Length: 172
Image (cartoon, rainbow, N blue to C red; front, side, top):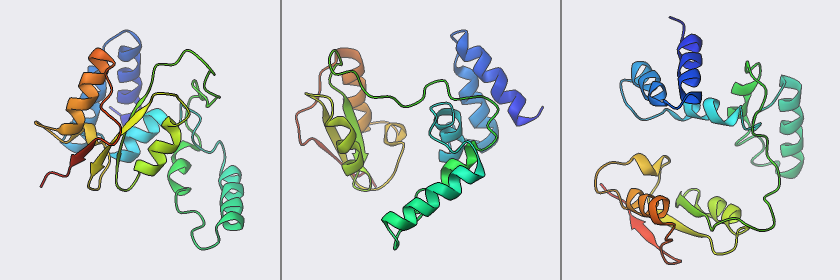
């Protein structure tokens, strides 16, 4: 069965309340339950409108990045090319956050991206970040005894945020 068909089946099941198909889809492709970043990005970023609708739009973004930052132009522009030709339009395009009524956010970031996460959560009063003192992404999936997962699980079940400045130490 083609991979697109498998993904479409997983999405149909998820709409009906059973998201287990995503784990099966990833496991069959990688032999692991951890989503490879590009496959995971395509399933979320394209539908969130975070890709380029055309190659021309990519070229324009690249031109603009060269104008703004000639030494680092295009550093983070290439991954969104995967959304060119994506078979569905964005269903959750970016929009401003409501001015009121949001619960504080819990952000998570490694030393590579914690500044970027902080720049997002600072727009929602009372929000905080847990910084992972190491490198990496998908920090929630790092395994048993995971400090990040403990904070995230506590937040999801109680809405209790860790104190500002909370750091999780890198493991092995």
